[in-house]
Length: 389
Image (tube, rainbow, N blue to C red; front, top):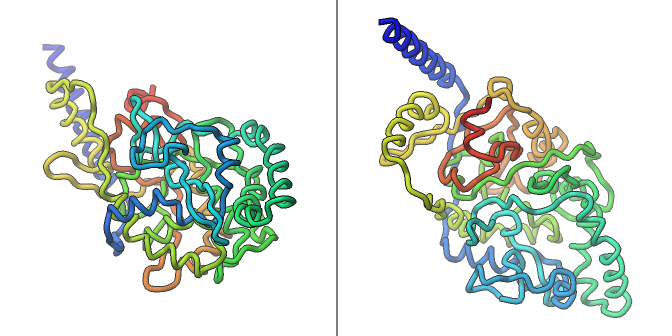
């Protein structure tokens, strides 16, 4: 009798807690949808692979000297002399170059397979990595400028931008990514209207680097806003092309790249997570579904035959996690002002930044493959997310 009474009390407490949690989460802000352009997914993949959005880079022989032959056949339709995250393209002056592609950040190896769309969690952005290559980089640039002026011109934009910002991108450990920080640094050197390069830092950003874990691309199809705090509003394509600020000349280059963004976005939205490779305990799954539906789905959505995703923003104070990513990079007041008054916010498909002091509760598709977890990659395993004690 005593055991039955205890179980009854526990059940009542759990149900009350679930009801309270649902009532609380129902009051959270929901991000509205915005129109997105559509195109041809295959053309989008081809454009990503082409690296045509990068207009400056290294001559092939210098790439090979610095990186060697790293391709292990992950991409069968790719030049096997190059790593999967680089490709041969043409610089603004017509010279052939090797340039990085989107797969620098948005592809990763898992179980000896390359998963396109899985965020990279192994790259090293620590100071040690940069300092190891800086002396060689200086020597090679001097060599190009002196003996191969056309190749120097083809490499100039890339080398100028990277040398100005690389020391301000250092992370404390490998695996986290400074791409959001890179964006903020690059706009600091760009004119907001024309996007032309300015040799002076106009925004004077904080020296603090707040990196993030790279989210999976296949989640984008469910999201009404980009980035961990949902600050990327309006047209997604404009945000996606912002990585080309590294080497573009001006807004005319941006407009040309923007023509391809409907295809790129359609390709990204066509991606699906890799299937879970191991056996699933169906009895546990039934019990887990009940718990998930009652305590998790109001923020993270429902999965299966009738999928839903609410796009809810959760205050950092409620989550109990650090707020620093939500207050930096895109959310920096000077960066937000620059962007919301720039080329990116103009025209028929504008984008804008709307900061939020917290984080969007992400979709959980393919969660088994996306470790480490949270916006800062601070939790290495899914079990630790569920049982934080």
